[in-house]
Image 1 (cartoon, rainbow, N blue to C red):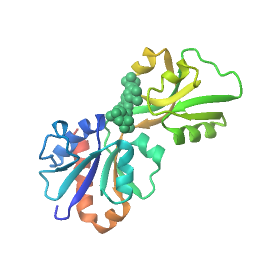
Image 2: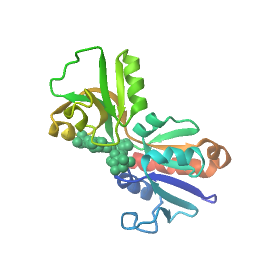
Image 3: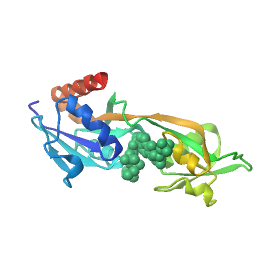
Image 4: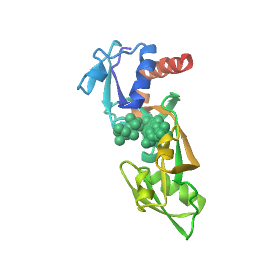
Length: 211
Ligand code: PRT
Ligand code: MG
């Protein structure tokens, strides 16, 4: 690739599954990301560099063009909106589901439901579509604690195996969205550097096919 491209990666579990896909596309960081405190990494691919940040920051970097391309969970895109972004590729990694969940045997009594979540926009939208009056309470972690402490009736959270729910006396109720990680692209970069970015999208699509 002749033009330089900056890719914003979500750290944590998504990163672990992203690196093998990038490697198959010929992009490998020159330093060991897991052992480094750096935030920016040069790679084996000419002009391609990686920045490793929190998932919730990835759409912001890409929307403003500080990164050209990003890898982020669909949950984050649904919550933050996809304005200024293309989403050309489902990477099929870090799969999970956004679900509502409640204490085992929970039944609604009364007109309103209190819902604890870090996904407040998704929750408001979901319950509004269902015609349910929900008071959405923003939390940053340990959603399962909220019903236990009578802060909320239900939670809306990411579920994979369901072990976290079961360990806290809760059960999944309804699926809100199916989640996997997506490649996102800055719209202006897609126009101005179409060749380089399209070739990256194609290599990653082939890597996903081969996975
Ligand atoms: O660090 P930060 O606050 O930004 O978020 P985080 O700690 O949740 O990040 P991390 O590394 O967990 O990655 C979050 C991203 O990974 C999400 O945006 C999803 O797209 C994706 N993902 C895939 C998951 C899971 N699977 C997952 N199981 N994110 C979170 N979980 C958590 C969930 O929150 C719950 O606490 O795992 C627990 C449920 O797992 P089970 O198997 O017990 O059901
Ligand atoms: Mg984390």
